Length: 138
Image 1 (cartoon, helix red, strand yellow):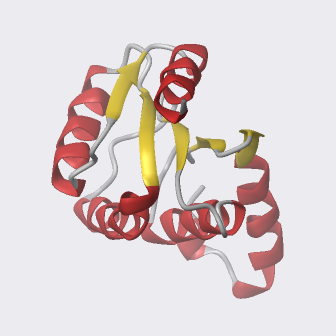
Image 2: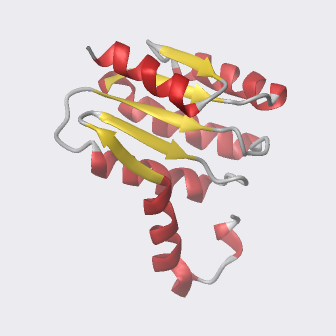
């Protein structure tokens, strides 16, 4: 999704699409399925929704499914780092699903270290990532 090129009147549909990509799994645990073509706007929409869901929580965890994404550009990576740093102090764990995509795994490693995640793990599947987050939340 490249929302930056779309007219503003389509924004509510984009917001609905974002809402379908982030949901609570259980208390303090969320799933985020990233857009295939990330942009600074999609990053903002995703993190706005995550912050909305996590409002009032002093700590939480989330799984981010990157298995279907393409490598984001430098501007998008910079925005991602900013947005993750804003919630980092409340994160118990982030389970990063990269599947078999070696390029995305490498980019995700760079971002996780740049952000300074206290606790994160890489997984082939969402189920594995969910279990890692559950262990961290105990």
